[in-house]
Length: 350
Image (cartoon, rainbow, N blue to C red; front, side, top):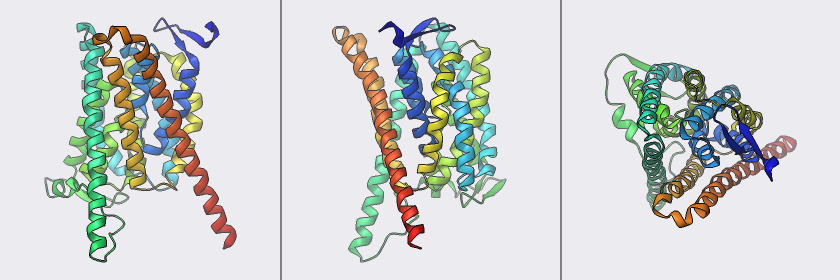
């Protein structure tokens, strides 16, 4: 089975190349759908396939930059991108990203990068999963209360409404964001983007894993606008991140190109799917994907304490990541096909 492995010339490791293709196509669909580069799956996925963590981070960012450009163009056609909000957030994103990238270089010199990055991932994924499902639970509670009164909950109602409190902060300059339907202090998106950019630089993600929920829960964007605007940010931060990690010699371009071929196709499918799957359908699917990703990283973390199960845990983590990507991609693709069929049937009937 030697032919299933390819030598990565810069990282100096042999990688299971079908795994790179599965990650590329699957994460292209998932990233285009959730409004992020999908690096929250790719970085741990590449690490599980055999890349050292620093190379996994740099390679993922390089592949993500090209794919996000394609997704942003598609979302822009649907009116899902608030370019003004994206440009405001760009300032904090770039500064935060460089701070995070420098911390990774420092951790690598100290020899702690693998363990520290994985534990940050676990903590972050746990927090986001709780936030998403807490929001869904509160939304359903509001629906039950409205039904008990014989009323119908308005379409734009949300469960968690932290953004309403933050919008009360009136530090000038104030900005009106047309596509998102928001009026707030410009410092709110700048602060949020710095925090997400910093974590993105450390974890090797475009920031979408944290920025998409931050846009929804802290800034108050509708879900579909958060998806498109986040992809715009992922594209910009990804291009910058790819440049800085390549300069630092931590990008494996062969692997990035293999993944990008499949990701460019998958990104189109994911972006179109948001036209047919709206609001809380996206949030629930996102929460499930985050839980699965956290479990795969946990399998790698417990190996030092369970050396007798190292091989089984390695296999289990690989199967979980690739299986999660495949199943989630298939679900999104099927829902997109169903939506297209229904739309065509309505047009035919009309």
